[in-house]
Image 1: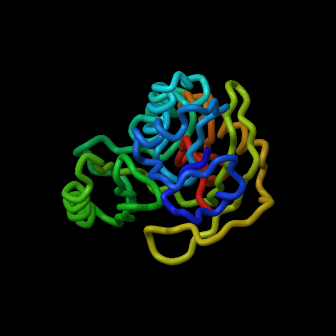
Image 2 (image 1 turned 120 degrees about the horizontal axis):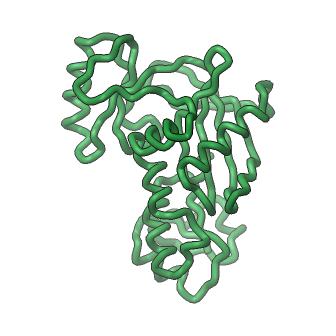
Length: 239
C-alpha cells in the first residue's frame, strides 16, 4: 500500500495499492493500512518515520517497523550523537550550549531536520553569536546546535534493515557545488573508496540507533582516512 499526496507520484503503478493521501496524517495511515497485512512499513524521502511507527504500533505491526525510540534517535541530532558516542563511532563533535568552539568554521543547524534546512557555515565568533540568535528565533522547538565542521569526501548509503541483517543496496559518492548550505546536486556510482569499510561503520551506526526493521540511510564523510557518521535516517533518500 503506497501513500502519497501527489496523485501522479513516481512509482504509483508499481504499488499493489496506491492511495492519494497525506502520509503525514496519522489517522489516514491507520485508515489506509487497515484491512491489509503489510510485511513492513517504510518511509521514502520524507521525515515521517515517527508517525509511521506510531501507526504500526496501533495496528499491532510493531515488529514490522522501526521502534518509536529508534525513529526519535535518528530524527534528533543530539540523541544520534549520544548513541554514536556510546558505540564508539566517530561523528562531528557537538559543542555544549554556551561554550565557544575552540576552532572555526563550525556548523549551526536545527537539532531536528534534514535537507540542509536552516544549516549555516559560521567562520568566527562574531558571526556565531548573530547566526545562533537568529537560528534560535527561527527554529522554534527545533533548538539549534553548534557542530564541528568536517571537510572531506562524502558518501551516501542506502539499506534495508531486517533484524540483525543490514542489506546495503547502494553507496554513492556525493557531489556538491556552490556556497553553503550545500545541496547535493549529483552522485557517482560505483565509488572508488573502500566500500567494506563504509558498510562496516554504517552497520554499526544502524545498530547503535536501534533500527530493526525498515529502510535506513546514512551520510558518511572521510577525512584523512578516518570515517565519520554525519547522519543516520530511518528512511530512504529522495531521487
